[in-house]
Image (cartoon, rainbow, N blue to C red; front, side, top):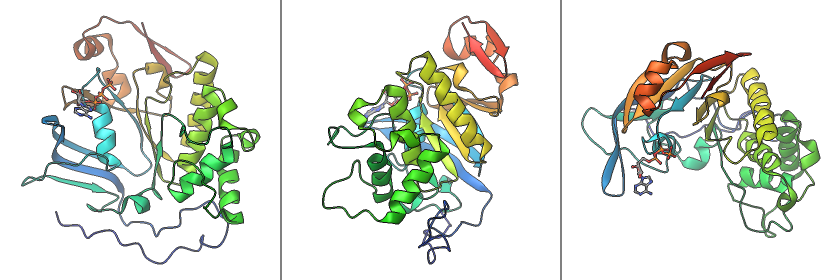
Length: 286
Ligand SMILES: Nc1ncnc2c1ncn2[C@@H]1O[C@H](COP(=O)(O)OP(=O)(O)OP(=O)(O)O)[C@@H](O)[C@H]1O
């Protein structure tokens, strides 16, 4: 492992202003992720085997694969919740660095959580959840100091998602779709370059799924990279071309979606016969 530990320089010009920009100096690399021959264990078992993968900064792509194939483990390895097993010839770098302070990594990498924090829901409003993302906590606590700049950054993130109306709404009274929107704003509040989403459309009804796709399309349009795990082909945005398929903890395929999302390959990967149709740039299977 050769890269130096990440030690950010002085905060950028954005510090002290309310500009919607990252507050940590930009790394000097074109790659978001580089993995070489990475194995990852969960408990006693190795569940990711010999994964080699490169993802460019700003790339938008999707990870598909059957239950238990290791998709979430791959995401958790990127977010530093799971660690590669050290071995000769193996390396993993994020934005060019193989070591990160997780709080600093969050400036570049927004992680969309699946559920809102369960604490303080009777008093927590949408804006509070987003500000808590800046503070690295699940929710806002009375002892925490919130500055005008933090409030402004949170409102900017909510505004990017047309979610100003959720700033004052109590999270306990939000629909699942509204909660997901607030969680995406929370992940965006650091103005990250890349957004990670693990099954973002879970538990959303059809209207909320459509809403989510529009939100993600607007994020893609801002040039923010997206790495998404999903079981639903309909979640794959027209903008996303690259598909990574995992099977039994190994990379099964990594190629443009029109090459991979075919009835034959889907049958081989999932063991189910499906038909695929494309409509308005979205793929659907049944
Ligand atoms: N906390 C854990 N402790 C031990 N084994 C785990 C743990 N979490 C996951 N595993 C195992 O690791 C393997 C990969 O799981 P992972 O959750 O990454 O798969 P996945 O592709 O995301 O699955 P799904 O589509 O069902 O969410 C599975 O065999 C799973 O049982």
